[in-house]
Length: 523
Image (cartoon, rainbow, N blue to C red; front, top):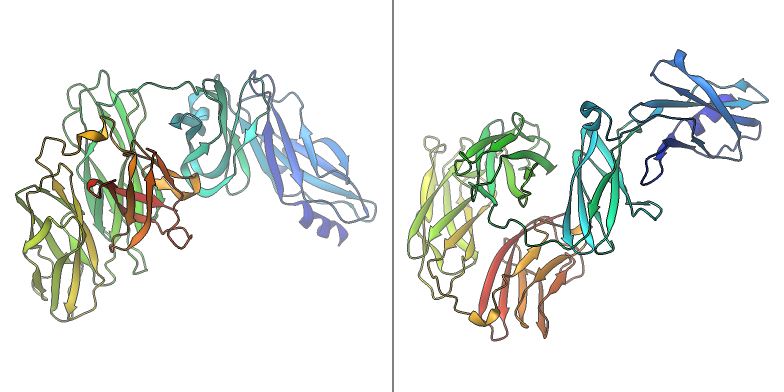
């Protein structure tokens, strides 16, 4: 009985890999276990194997119970997975059975590509002069950490990400400017099998402006997908590249029922860069009645490095009545009109009377036709047209407004909001005193857990207001004598705001609106 009790106390063992930081001259693993409290236990026995077979395990050492870890430095090789198990030796009941199994694999640049792809750092990108983001991926669902160091320093380890997935973004803060760093990812599967990537060197030397002429052009920044159906998004480049650009499209966080069909891989060449290539998103059938959201990332995997783009995909549930729009947003030329379609997700039991109306944002945008709609059992799946106009105005800002679809009578249907964007036609800048540098928001999308949202190149005196989609003010600030501000994601009640899309309104010191932006906040 004592050996069984002991076994349960050491069967969860954690594996850590260590190696000489820059030279990669050696591989070692640290195996840790819970402290042994049974006084009859004399030793903890450490076994190692090159396979998962129990019969292949060999005793490599033993330690007293005053220890709760062991470092294996036995001439281990890169590119080889080593498996470990423990046993206990007791004066009362002899040797116990094996503990649970863990394993470790450390990769090297000389390892075959099929091994290096198991866990790899894809790129390291600058946020600011002292902050960098490590983009890393695995071929299986994982959690993990990133180790980083300078050649003359001990490695530092980031907080372990508990968000399980195959693609990860880990932020490194407080780095020295104009130096060389090294990083590697440590990935763990659900059984605590560890894989360590190759070492990835990167420079914190301040970078030039980069290739700002090339960016992704996406057919929409948000898309609705009816449950158990699909929807397409189109992607192209803004300018001709010098060489082929390999692009990946993948889901990062959110509803796992929303997936990218196929490989999600695109190639843009000097001949097809200006032609939309389409990726299909699918929303799987599920049992709930929630309209799930997911973030779809679009990323260049080869030079030139193009800024990432995101699309918000929303599953429209078919287990309950919902409004569905023909597009997630609509763009209207200033002085002109544009149309968007509205329908139901399923047949209603009774007629549904609907209003479509301006909710918040730029008041130059208005509904001129289709403000009242009626859905019946015969026309519920036919798009009803709503026409939106954008009035002429003196500014040169692409204003945005939230338009709400609301069920007035009949069955209960949740409100649906969509974004109307005015495409400005004024070329002259009405506020030339602001300077030539555009106002920038970074990062966008903004993940609260990564730190602060930075807004730069603001007028020296002014104010900024952040609103949610319902037009409620979440946060505001006024300043004088500075050009940059930061927001930590909290509202006026000092609690973090919810994930979602928010509008930012920036005014100069005279109260003139000089910029309006949409930002995406993630938690």
